[in-house]
Amino acid sequence: MSGFVTLLGAGPGNIELLTLLGKRRLEHADVVIYDHLVNPDLLSYAPANADFLYVGKKPYQKHISQDEINDLMRVQAEAGKKVVRLKAGDPFVFGRGGEEGQYLREHNVEFEVVPGLTSAITGLAAAGIPITHRDYASSFHILTAHQTGSQPLNWDSIAQMEGTLVFLMGVAELHTIVTELLKRGKTATTPVAIIQWATQWRQNTGIGTLSDIEAIVKRQHISSPALIVIGGVVNLSQQLSSHRALERKHILMPFSTHTRTHDLLADAGASIDFFNLGDQQSHDVDLPDFNQSGRLVITNLRAFEYLQQQMMQVGLDQRALSGWQLLATNNLIKERLQQRGVLVDHVIDLANLNATDWVVGEQNDLSTMSFDDSNVDRQLMTYTDIFKQQSISSPDTFDAVVVTSKRACLALVHGLEPDQLKQIQTVPVFTLGDKLATFLSDNGFQSVTNVGNLAQMVPHVKKVIKND
Image (cartoon, rainbow, N blue to C red; front, top):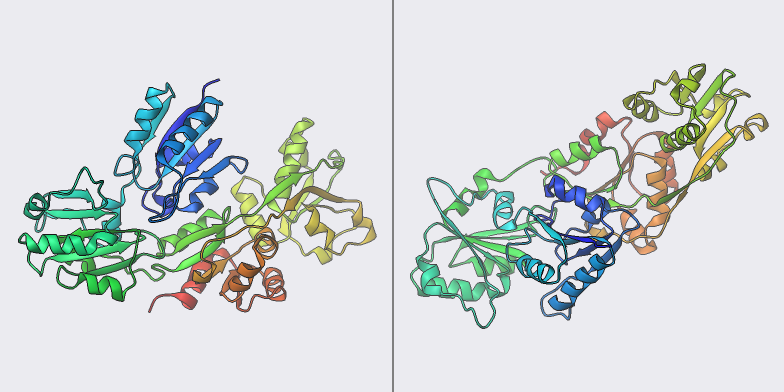
């Protein structure tokens, strides 16, 4: 059985700048081979049981060779796997994607190239710098400052180029770039910008001229990875850069959080990173007699979905519930069920259960709730959450945490490494409902805000952490 390799461009860093085809390829990957500069949140799009193989190359550090990477792709594909070779930016822009494609062709391995947005263009745009502009530049030139010994840069030619110059992988060579361009006729007042971690929360932009850019880089602690742009278009940065309320604010959320919340925060300028919600183990339950009328209390949307799946296995669909009242334990569950075409009769507090009510939920959650003896045998524990310890990158950099479900709260408390949890507990947390707010406070979070409902989430976050 023959596999297949996708040489996939991950884009400049912000995961929403991945292409739709790229996302689809990750969702069906058996193996993901990824680089150092790839945003690790992109891996969340791949199946949890995929193999994730890190082959990152860091400057001046020992790393896996290109030959080894090539062999790794071939071996995995020959084993029948769908392999995604995930590369920062675009695989054919100084990414050695051309070499990898040649190797795969020579070894009769089927492959495709899925382009990505290159930071040479999108990185500039993220800092408000257009790579071309009719008043400043009608052409551009993209170069790598990291050269092999056999291909030195022709500085005489570069210094005479018109339009915008963009150097990738150039921070370590900044002094050489500045010196050579000045020596060959570029004026000391030529505008220069350096953009580190473009499109991400940690984006750091330094703007100056050839005369002072080295001092600016040192003052702002700019290092790799960064790109260098030289030319008049740099002068447009202040005018064209974004100034939204949550610009560059770093927010932690569960990966499967409500899309609308994520979108609203991102649209306000926030950069979102994710933590994993863990795994789930479904359970078969003894179904009620749906020929009799009754009330079904839904404490958890996923638990209800598992119940529906089990009903379908025995030939029952939504019509089997036509004689039943459906009750939700909060407005969020009611709203999300309605979005799926399921109408809830009303919201109920668990303290007001009837003796004949059936309750569907997650095993650990229901086990901690107080029920009358009459309800104990009417609990439909359709699945169990399993929280595996996980690590998040840069836990000390988050400005806020947003969690909107009990499962997300549990994953935060029981899934993060202890040292990282201590750091996150000092960050403002925004949640929905008194119960979740109390749970988080009881588990050591120092600043917890119950925003009431999803519509108030973004206004509350802006009020607390917005830019001045």
